Length: 412
Image 1 (cartoon, rainbow, N blue to C red):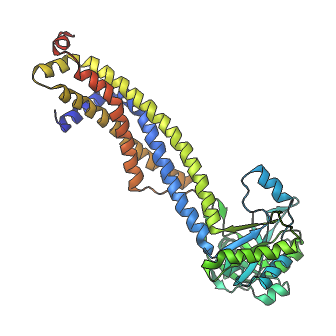
Image 2: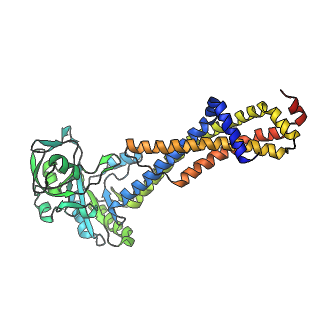
Image 3: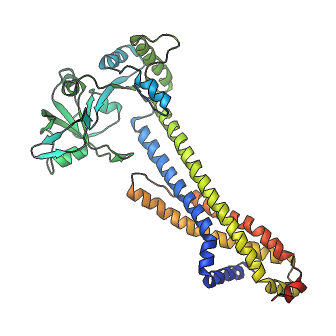
């Protein structure tokens, strides 16, 4: 019996026993669907996160009080630290010889002590804005692009000028169909003149990058007080000397904060590599967990396939005896049942691939998580399904091949 005859036999079995066939394949379908969905989303997220993290460039680093919090101990240690200030920023700028650009920002959340930040222009207003106090070179260090108008100047920062650079959504919502440059908006009752508008950046990790407003950090402190911490951003011209530049900045800040030998820095230096490594560790853990769940589903599916194939051997005992009586060798019988089992599982694998691709696409449509379906995961899913079929069909195939043709022919 060749491949197409065997495939036709399996297909006929599907048509005559639809429910049994579906239940037989259910474990394999669930397992492969999970694998394809998870791999597609993780790969899509990896590309997205790495491109986002590296947007500011691999030759920049950030210094702040908290850094990356991954445990309760990290949090307890961070809240004991002192906030960084604009004086710290200026000290790094003056003393770090390898730091070509030193800037920074402060940020206010949507509310401060239960007082909401309100941004309006005329009758229009916007909810949940993110207001930044920035240095004049922040846009350059963060690799942001101004598409209309200009950036803040050093003079505006020094004199706490009421100037602002706004994000795409702020411009569109407050000034629909108008050029926002030169217009005025109000932040908590204080008026700021718009000098520039940023390029549209969309959403990153569910956070809208276009509902932002940048004002001079000195003006920010007048509006919101000096209690908000400063995040220091540093750009290094020579990427090969990043570690040296970080050491210079570290020495400056440790001296200012009176850190003794053996004490922790009292701040965290974050680089692009740190963030990428953290993300990959997180995604690897999530990937391993989901693959574990998928493996259980595949094992269950394999057990079901083996049971169904054993039932098939019993139901077709007479057929096996007839084929042996007509010259079929044990290896022919064994190959037939193995092929049936592999085709059965591979069919479940193909259905799982289609469902997994659809599920990954649906997740991307309904959430900010991107997905990326490539040939590699598809082939892996089909290989896993076929392997499950091969292993599950081994014992039924051996049992069928060992049947005595005389005893098999007598079976009704």
